[in-house]
Image (cartoon, rainbow, N blue to C red):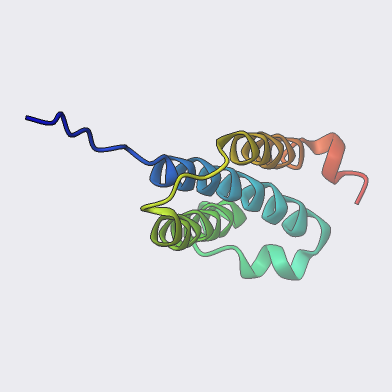
Length: 108
């Protein structure tokens, strides 16, 4: 009898990882936008006691979830270049973290 092995593709894992990087990037971006513009800060204040943090996190989670759904549906049965996805994720996470520091958005 032949030994049949099913090959596991890395597309779903890569999609989850890249989506996390996208979510981090957008959290940093909306942090900068809310500090740069008081109107945007007001728009992002979904909850008055929490302030703009409520909008920043909710929108970042929406970007994460939507990007994960799109990437997972596109890559679910594929073998993707994991090195490129990994490096892109690292860059997005680093930029997202950098944009949350006051030294960065104070320049804006």
